[in-house]
Image (cartoon, rainbow, N blue to C red; front, side):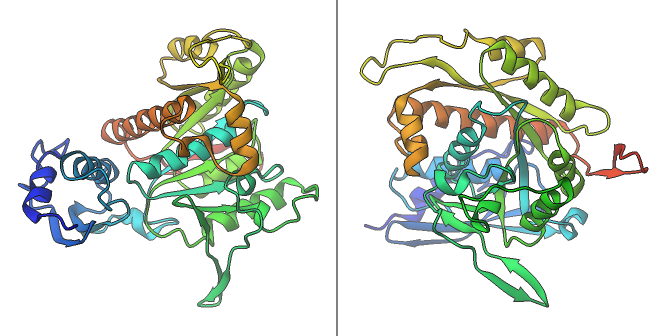
Length: 375
């Protein structure tokens, strides 16, 4: 089966540039359109490489093709980006990564890595190019959740520097300290060792072009968090919590850390995990075993978006253990919840990029370790 170029162009005319308020075809942004059977590929031409709507327009283009041409068209990953002007930021670390999203929690055990895993895959399903760094140095779980525990990243020399090729599965590029240590060994590392490991994953990973790089942070607030905001400019942070009061108290600390004057990273919103228990055999029943809507109330109090409410179901535990994340089953209750969450995250990232200046990296300015945004 082969598609007609006219149909593809008609579909892309439905995609409007939010700032210029014209469709991308009329703006001459669509170039090099090629159709090979069910595979559709083309280039999106932007005036500036740091156009804040690059990711949103690429995703909207994928949705338009699937809606107006064929839902089975092979378009994801086949849209290239070209720009006339290279932004100054492109000379820095991760120059081809459009958005860096930190997924954090005030305490452990709230399902932060499960949220990060399913968010990454859900964003990729929308047509985005996605990477994932497992920065939970002391408890790396991403390799198991992606069923790649037996994989080892390839390391090669480029101009005398070791470059690490990320492991890929489910359309996600990923790196974790778990790939480099025995899964049964306890990591007894001092702070500098942990932060150096994170810096290597960031600086030496061959990440290439990404719409989103998700960083799964350790629970709490630590040297790893400070290293991340020093090393790269974070687009925004997502705070994960359960509805219970003890978890919410720690979530508030996480919000305060990112929003504080010394860090000043936008908080994109909150995700309430374990919102209610739903038995697999009774999908319409909800049992609020950890309290009801605690995270929703906190989001309202802090004037932050509630990005998603994820129920507890046996399938989530099983999917994490077997390396088949719940979002892969798009028709399941949990799969739909994760897809809706990812849509809200993408919307908040686009809104943040439209309304706020780019986040600045943080630098240490004195021996006491105080941090201030770079100018």
